[in-house]
Length: 184
Length: 184
DNA sequence: TCAATATGTCACACAAATGAGAAATTAGTC
DNA sequence: GACTAATTTCTCATTTGTGTGACATATTGA
Image 1 (spheres, chains in turn purple, cyan, red, orange):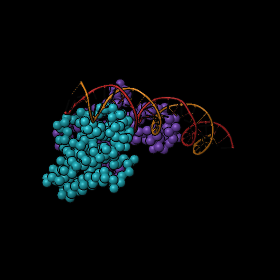
Image 2 (cartoon, rainbow over the protein chains, first blue to last red):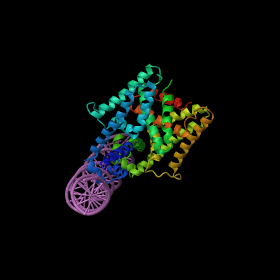
Image 3 (cartoon, chains in turn orange, red, yellow, brown):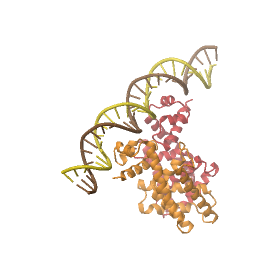
Image 4 (cartoon, helix red, strand yellow):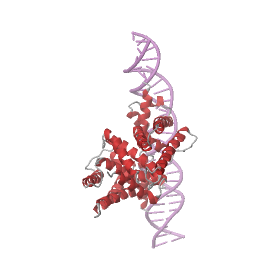
């Protein structure tokens, strides 16, 4: 039953994503598991946070990596990147929150921070490339498109969770709005 | 100096928006004011939350109301609604969080809930109207466009806060991406 | 069935957050 | 300069969250 660890991490990401200071009991209840059990896997709150950070890096960043390595048309790569981010769900959002929050001391030597920086930078450069190729508009900055990308991912994840969109439509709608939203 | 109360509410909305379980000290520090002073204006945490809810309803919802009452072209109304929501900033986002969170018992008899429902419903009906008029696409559902609307507002607010977009460009970029994102 | 492993229960010490009283301090106002 | 209202400072009791130890109770697999 070693997948309890993973369940706890998933629950923690989900809970902390919309309430960073939530009590550990909230995480435990969500698994569901006793708080005592949670503490058997993670020494303290910070330990759990670190585990979350690692897990996110592994799953989310590697998923994005894979997309950009495929020999596809640029625009199709972007589409796949969006889908990959949506599949990561709350993880992708939490990745940004973690490294963008005030309390977080973002240092590039830290592995997780470096990975975050790399992922973000690649997406940014990729968009610049698309702009230069005339595939996406130059009416808005590449930085805005990056934020917009994250925003659409969040919207898609929340929409599915709240039930306002069917699972089958989720990615389709997201790509529709995103791709049109960045075209001249 | 009765505007201390308002300052506290504004700080609370901002803090609780990205950390609902944050300590009251965080709110007090942000004003800045002593925690003791905060407690003189609000009996307890829940009291403050209620005040936030009321404040949001007043400012945010009324701003939207005003837009829809103006005799403008439909698409221009939508544009103004987006700008109004962005101007409300974190308030608009928090409005959704409050009434969409798990812990919240959403009951229509409650005034704040009713106002939220009304605002949301009107936006939804407005979009349906735009779809029927052929102004916005029917490739995606009106419910999705509602979520997308909120998503773009959030993105715009965050982008400005994090400095990735200039204040002058914020609304322009947001409307560009939103309006294109919902056109066929 | 037995042993190993995982989880639950209960109890505890400690830290942090909450809420409030009383007196000192500051900022305006006349 | 004295008065007033708002705020700070300091203090304290209470509650809530955190982390751990000892032991009981499942669950699993040989």
